[in-house]
Image (cartoon, rainbow, N blue to C red; front, side):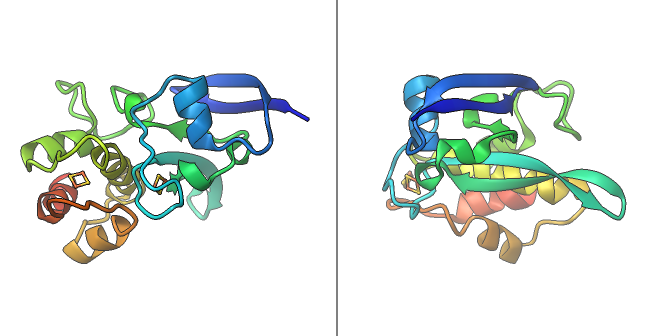
Length: 178
Ligand code: FES
Ligand code: FES
């Protein structure tokens, strides 16, 4: 059996019909929507190459707020994002939901920090790192929280690089909060 899947992307509702219940979010993104910026590395939830960000509204003492989560799309069933807002690396351009954005820039602060810290390495791990940074920015920097080295290591612990290193990426995490 198949059923329709709906989620929010770039402020618009996306509706996909006939999405099989066992189809992963990564398969839907890459194969059905042609969003190949999201990579498949391990396909087992270990490497973070497939990281995308979802957001859901949660009640807080200060009112309803969006809570962002970086998730591994390779091990998420597509239907698990039903009704949520979703960002892939292709979406990190000017976006009214993104605050504290430099009006002169066309990229998200997470991307700008990766560029200036030389944190962009290979095309497999980088989109995943950028999405984890994006989630960290939206959840922490937009709430006025400083990014420490330890916090950056924690939030990026699901993203693996098998060839170069992490220092410039951790630098980028700290820089985007400054
Ligand atoms: Fe490695 Fe998804 S492809 S965690
Ligand atoms: Fe991408 Fe190491 S896996 S630079």
